[in-house]
Image 1 (tube, rainbow, N blue to C red):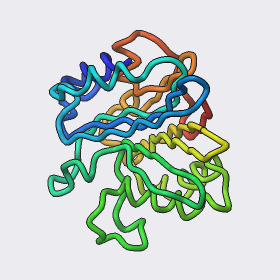
Image 2: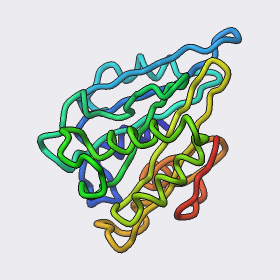
Image 3: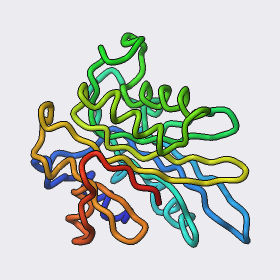
Image 4: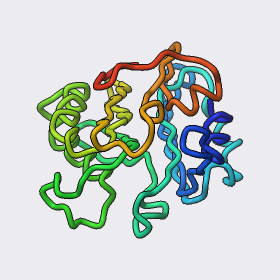
Length: 217
């Protein structure tokens, strides 16, 4: 999986061979001897140039729940480690790690001029909702609230408390605003993995999720 992500980040066949050069990151809970260990790493370097990749990959063994993301920025001024996914915030007793692919019109947000990516603004909305909604319900609300103003809301939400670790994935794209062919926006699932269509094609595995669906892993 990580090798596939590295290679399609170098040259994405479903996006005209363009790269994803604007950083990468991973957030994961790894079970070691019956207890969880947390791994959270972000880099402004491309995943295919980061010498730390092999060492980090070696830690993701055994029972593991997590998100890995490689970024191509749509805004030149919002680059660097602070804008690399997965993002992290707290919501009540929960830690939220969130990665998103796609774009959302700034006018969709209450404070559109904040110097953050649209992805981080989406996470702030999730954090505001989750004390009263489950993580899955919050992603469904995200889809319904921001879908019409987005190209894609493809996202992964890792939710962790002392008593619960959950991973939920939203596959949503809006063909009325899409900038790529439909296949580019599809997410694929096999076993307990969900990945982009580019990664799934490289591995030759998986079945597509339905547009608008939320899956829990």
